[in-house]
Length: 125
Image (cartoon, rainbow, N blue to C red):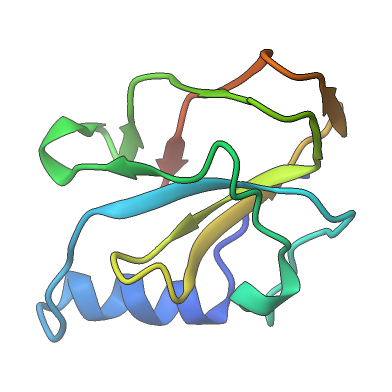
């Protein structure tokens, strides 16, 4: 599945674009339920994996070129095994979904001590 910004994420993005709401760093987190993001998705639709938790993506560390943004690879190391179906990017308060993506080749069953790496990217095509 391709990256999807649900309705609440579009509202956040629009508020940031027109400077109506202050932007902030976003958080990247994996989820463990078999769920395909849709336009009406909200945070409670995702079962977030708390071990290894979220990664904060700071605004200054994004590279923006020709309508696309990218961030350096983020590696999640599991101390307990888990199955992950995709990832979500949350607003600064970690209360709303800015965008989400279900793995096209997943889910990934990750044993204790192993890792999953995500290179966050987004484009405005």
